[in-house]
Image 1 (cartoon, rainbow, N blue to C red):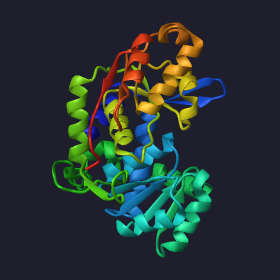
Image 2 (image 1 turned 45 degrees about the vertical axis):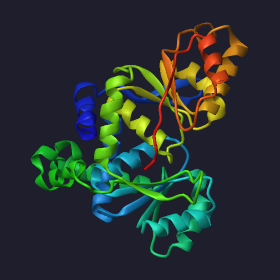
Image 3 (image 1 turned 90 degrees about the horizontal axis):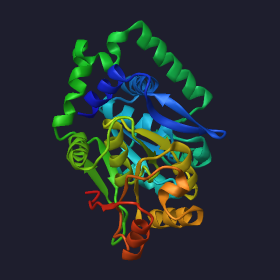
Length: 323
């Protein structure tokens, strides 16, 4: 389902924005064509060098983070998102526990990634946007241009790739996501792509969103709520504003002209306070109404619900477990 949703957006809306990133005081769009090309190149690298393995991701919310995550899923490998706030020892322990073969990291966590590699002999590492990684990606792009039948998006004519995508209906473990550890030590939950697709299908049928809407990639992506809602929105053709710093939540709503958002209760309250400082309603403060927000991860306090309602924001609540 996700693969077909991405293919449909690529074919029918290639120039439409899949992501929006900040540059100066503007929102720069990244098209569906570019996004799916980037996923294709990274997936090609994975199939060449670490096929079917467990791969960790360490970094803040970013466009590159989602590209790597999607590429791992669609290549048939298994992804383990890692909380960037953990120590190098804790990251290494989790990667050893899931028997990871590789770790992809952002430049902000390069030093920690190198320490993790020292603690995990044999672990392959690669950074977002490093010169070495860029060379691998460029080489993959050129190989796909020369041999387009090896592309994910040409899999109908490539039996070997088609077979690698059949895992969506099987018990193949696509994600190993650690629980929050609220009541015990965090545990690695084994999740399938079929489960992720079920979430997108069921929530997509009841949560109002449409192609061309705008939202935020704000929730931490190492948590299942952040991962699931990100794929839900992408599967529906929603453009995602990249917001790595939750303290800039009001600026992100204003800059990206957001229609709706998924938030945790604490962020919902911060958002309500920011709006109240600017006006008597969301529409007055932001120049446009907010259709709704949906909170999860914890119970929404009644005072926060009433605060948002008074500002003209419809508030929904979701509940789920990583397991």
